[in-house]
Length: 271
Image 1 (spheres, rainbow, N blue to C red):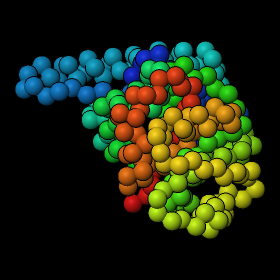
Image 2 (image 1 turned 30 degrees about the horizontal axis):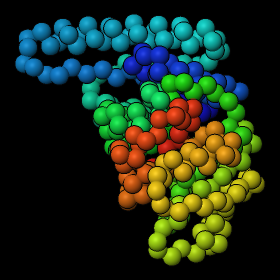
Image 3 (image 1 turned 180 degrees about the horizontal axis):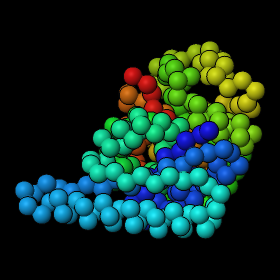
């Protein structure tokens, strides 16, 4: 049975992301954990334990309310509640180890998923320090079957076999077409060899390869490609080198203000 971790702060944004995920996995045998993480800044106050207890009670009340709202739409969904105290990234790492989900679901606000999710300090800390597959859902996104999924890459020699499980599962569930959008670098890369290596990881899946130059506004080029090819979901690998950082440079992200409906599946390079 698939395990899916839903993060919530009880906002409409987080609720929308949870609804998106429940709809996405509605026809599968899936178990969901709805997780709220709360923390208290230590101030030396003698009342700190009382505050912590009150926050724990508030967390559980919020979780029960969210469960009621989600079950109103998805009465048969298997949803477990989890309230955890501590620093966001550390608690999340431990929860991943204990719960063993396949993917984390996050909500993001604003006109641009990339802009407002990645510029948010807490979310940025998660994506930087929690190396785990995550689906980022913009606040206005409504689920539609991902007939076409764009996968932006720079064709670097990365072992994608260790990270594409969630993507492959999604493609097979919806018979999606995978559009590889390759960003051309100045250094020479054997395209045919790179494409064959990538295709070997997706047997029986409809693939196509496309190229854009690494010039101008890279984010805008990627989103333009998605619009022109009717892709509804963007997949990215969080590299441990400069490509990811360059795409998500805050100065570039701020230009993306009219693309609120593209959820992002973010995978992490191992090691």
